[in-house]
Amino acid sequence: MELKDPKNLIPNAALVPNVEINEKPRERLGSDAGHERVTAIDMSSFSQVSASADRACLVVIYGPELGKRAPLGQATFEIGRSSRSDLPIDQESISRHHARITFDGTRHMVEDLGSTNGTFVNDVNVKRQPLKDGDQVKLGRSILKYMAGDNIEANYHEEIYRLMTMDALTQTHNRRYFNEALEREYNRSLRYRRSLSLILFDIDHFKKINDTYGHVAGDSVLRQLAMVVKPRLRSQDCLARVGGEEFAVLLPEVENAGARIAADKVRAIVEAARFLVDSKEFGCTVSVGVITFDARVTSPQMLYEMADKNLYAAKNGGRNRVVG
Image (cartoon, rainbow, N blue to C red):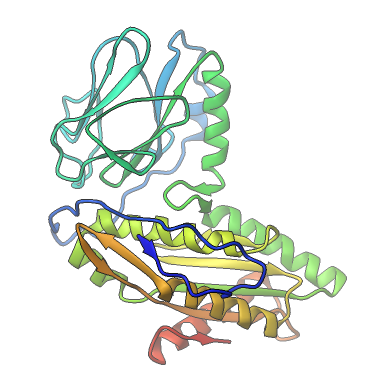
C-alpha cells in the first residue's frame, strides 16, 4: 500500500511511512467464503501443557484452532489443507500442500510449495526463508508465530495471554479487551465527571473489495488500515477491532467537538490511503459514528449502541462521512 498522506492531517503527528500491500489474491470462493472460522481459546488445554524438550514451535495466533502449538524438531514439517499435513489448516485460502519447514542443523527454514496465495514472513512474500524467534508466518488467512529458544514455555504462555486481548491480524485490541476498557472508562467518567467519547468506523463496500480482490487481500487491507490509523492516536486512546471490518476508538477525556475532529481525521487518513494488490491500485473509505457520554447515557452498552446508530446514519447518508 502506497500511502498518499495529506500533510498536517493531525497536528504534531509524525508522517506515516509508505506501506505497500503486494499480495497475490486468491480465486473467489463459494457462498461460505465470507465466513471466517476462528475457534475460541481453550484455557483448560493450554494450562495443562507440560514442559517440552523441543526448543522451537509454531503457535496459531490467527485462524482455526487459535492458540494451538505445533512443536518443531529436525524432521520435515509440512503445513497445508491436506489432512495428511503435519499441521492441517482447514481453510480454502490454504493450498493442500502450502509450505514446508526444514531444519538445516542450526536453524529452521520455511519454504513455499507453490501455493496459490503465497507464504509471507513478517508481511514479506518469500520462497525460502530462515526463521528467527518471534517471526510471524502468514499462510492464506492464517497467521502462525515461530518461537525458539530456552524460554519457549514461558513465551508460549505469554503469547496465549496476549491473544486474549489482541487481534492478531490487525495488531489492535480485540472485542473482549474493548468491552472491558469501555466499562472501565465509563465508570471512571461517571465517578469523576470526566468526558468520554467513542468513535466507531466501518470500511465502506468492504464486500466489494473481497469479491474483487479476494479475502486474502481484504485481510491485508484491514491489517494495513490499522497500521495507518494507530500511530495517529494518543497513547491513552484504545483502538480495537470489534467486528469483521468495524473498528472502535475509545477517547478518554475528550469532549464531542474534539471527538468529531479526531473522527474526521481518521476518515481523511483512510481516504488518502492507496492499496496496491497484484499491480492494481485502489482506495477505500470509512463511515464514522461518534458519541459522547452525557445525561442520556445510562450504561456502557447504551454508549456503544448510540455510536453504532450514528455509524449507520453515516452509511445511509452517503458513506465517507462522520455523524455524531
